[in-house]
Length: 155
Image 1: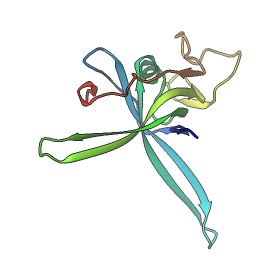
Image 2: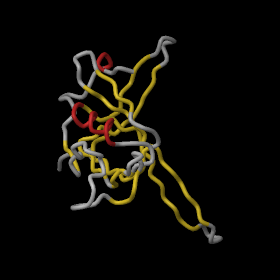
Image 3: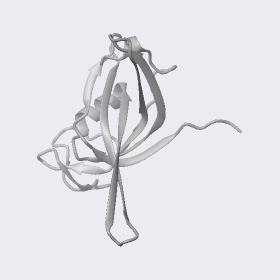
């Protein structure tokens, strides 16, 4: 049996994506995605827990995220877990586990103010992207082969 490293998330953006470029010119977007679950405890009280996920999108997918994803927007992310490590100036080792996105689906359309207006319409109606070419409903992209090295990370 082989190995599998696959993550599928549906959540809301905690902030607008941050777009940067590596030394070789590749676009990379970073953003945080919140997923929440609710349940009732033994006393019948509603409980909620929110998990925050660090997402990394590369190249064209990073550009799409920058242009179309905004704080609060609901999105489906598919990708893989990747942990990177680095040592800071005080010689302290740090670790960060991220979801490297390979697919993004925009689950809501945007209104004239750039906010979310519910599930994205599948056909007809006004162009929610205001005379911009709308993004695909979903986009697949592979991250750079072999992952990335510390020198390629612009942050």
